[in-house]
Length: 251
Length: 307
Image (cartoon, rainbow over all chains, first blue to last red; front, side, top):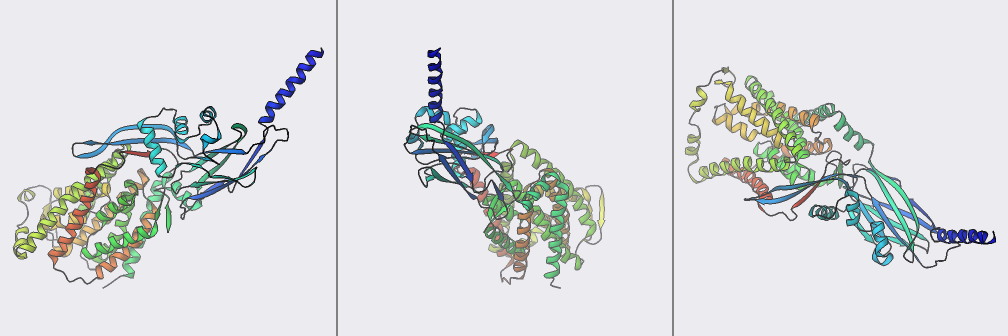
């Protein structure tokens, strides 16, 4: 009976210790939870503030590290390869990724290889390549590396070690830059805190990118009421043509 | 200043687009052409999706044709009966053109079709204009002109369904007129061009429509055909960007007025030479796209995300 009791206490202690290592509370707040695209939209900057709440029972007192993965809505992407046929460069092979991430940002406070070991990197998908492979469910091919190259050039896939800065040992700030081409939809931010290479806290936040009232209404009208929208464009064009003919009348 | 185009789904520099549309409008006013054959390619070179460029320019051509057609209407320089036949052909052509456009878009071949059509169309017409104007400059211009006016083709004379067009003083079969307008409506709605630069010379040289009437009649055809093309594009492939159209119409209208008022003392042959160079230059620029090895052979296009 005594031994059983001791075992139980021991188990509880072990459990608490194991929990203790993961007991840091991670709080993250965004400067805004939705980004509105209006006619002046030329990209946006989203600031994330956060705090790692240190657990008093914690054995680990090293510095914290953070890795943040931002994922945009996923959707189908058609890849085409131009090949030379005779004189011309024409579209040749084609490949469709059914679920490719439309936006990816991997932020950290220092290079990920310095933060975690290989195993944790694998688990986290701490590279654009790993995130794309995870999103598409396909291995690395010419098409997937081309997709990454193109999206990187467009600023839609970014990895920025150093985008997260610690303002105090526990308080941090990160900046996400969304380019003008940022796709619409729901974005997910996965933040993971590490101490001495071990995961100690994890949290997920979200924000959305959407068109502002008038841009959204125009785009919806163009899609859902094509004929009416077309008539509106025609009426606009003809009345401007008419006005021009009155203003600039020469005879 | 960047503005966001709601249908194209991307930001563009508003000043660049305004400057471009004023410049193209100026050229169109100066040369008396529609300018679609310049505007659409320039928008494509700017990075606007070809489908959006073609569909949006259609509405700009409708606006500029409206201004032009009204001016000719006031001078009663339109043959309505003739333009009715041309409109019938043009609208039918626009319908076929938009159907072809949509089919190619579904297959992912639209961009290539547009590029090759531009190379072929502008290459042919540009080189014809260059040859004709150079011949006129190098030899006596009167001789060149008299060679052009050798009368109507005898193959046209023999066709049935002849109709009398009093205003133009024509008695001709409607079949070749309809087919000509059909081709122009097809090419126009596929490529975002009005087609005046084909229709006007064709009506003058093939059908001998009087020059006083030909431009107004052609503008009336362009107006209705481009209205149809805009409506069909908007209703089926949803590619008409109203904000882009608005900028193009504003810039194009002002540019055209300046162009039309610009007093350029230049012989007509040099005018045609310049226009020929312009048309040919656009074809060469497009040819470069398919002849020169691309920097990156891969292209990625989103097919179902929001934008």
